[in-house]
Amino acid sequence: MTVEAILEERGQRYGVFADHANIAQALKDEMRTSPGWKRLSPDQREALEMVQHKVARILNGDPDYADSWVDIAGYAQLVANRLGAPA
Image (cartoon, rainbow, N blue to C red; front, side, top):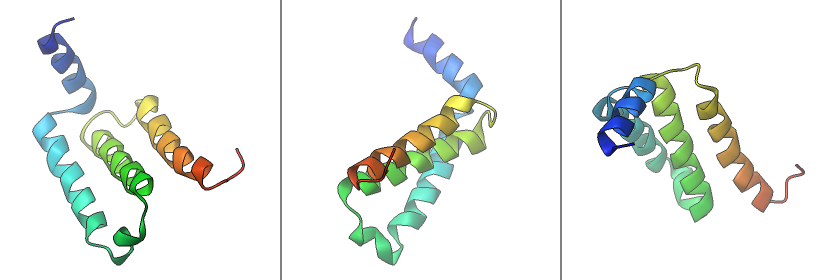
């Protein structure tokens, strides 16, 4: 597949990238200004940012694409695993 073909396919699934970026950055900006942000470890921050990335894709694109929801659960599980939560 060409890059253009991949971008076309992703655009159909996730919507216009610039619109997605606006939503994602607004969500991430809100998290970064909260008092608790500085208390988070790098993996916790990254997991939350990735969750917001996926949330923005859901809001901007296909909300019925199950993989986006599974990805959200997966990022949360990675942190929970490090913290010793039972599987």
